[in-house]
Length: 79
Image 1 (cartoon, rainbow, N blue to C red):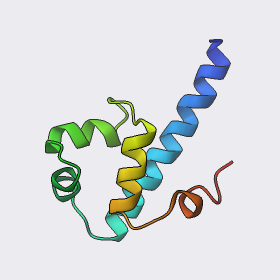
Image 2: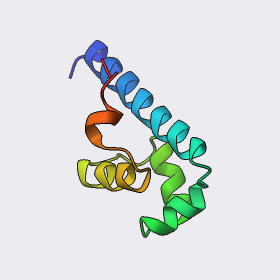
Image 3: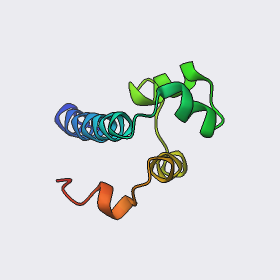
């Protein structure tokens, strides 16, 4: 993959992860609480939010479900 393409996708990934963090905080859910609901360790979930562990579609849908937002609503303003 070309460097510019890779950078574009990494930036989009950061936007998605930041939206997840923002939504979690707005719901007053801690990383530990969400990790427990997702059957992950706190450290494992921290790695997801920071992008150290890739977020696959299955896990993304789980996270959005726990954050009480549909994928459609989550991505509505996404470019």
